[in-house]
Amino acid sequence: MRDEPKNKGRCPIEDDGPVLFSSNQIAVDIFQECRPSAKQVGAEDKTYFYLHPADIEALFRVHAIPLDEQPRLLSKVFLLQDEANRRSPQRPRKPAKSRSRRLR
Image 1 (cartoon, one colour):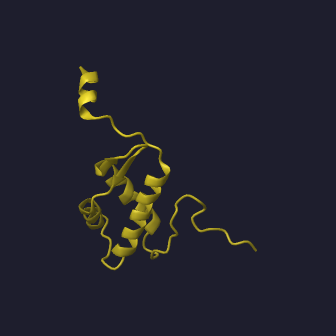
Image 2 (cartoon, rainbow, N blue to C red):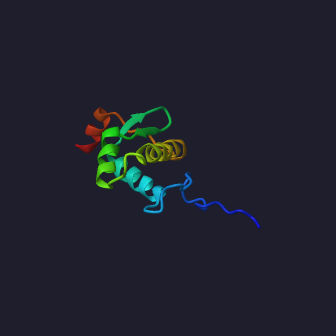
Image 3 (cartoon, one colour):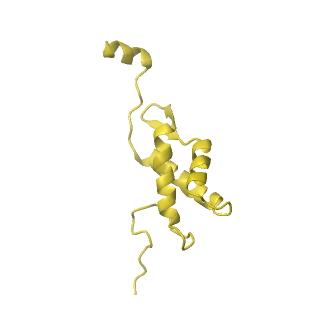
């Protein structure tokens, strides 16, 4: 019999969380909630973003994540950040000066 992956390609991390909640889903929720306020760093070919640790910590409190589960969940959130930075081809933002001229 062939072994099938637990996550079936939907998420790059394996779910090894407790039965009470799916740690993959919590990690994805935290990642998606932190992404809009992430720090964006422009490079030559794309824009990279980095999540703020304070946002992640606040969402751990909101989701009532136990202290012993936080390190494992944090590593999953950062894995999602690395995957997103590696895969998503984004264009860097134009400098503010040229954008302001265009908006006039």
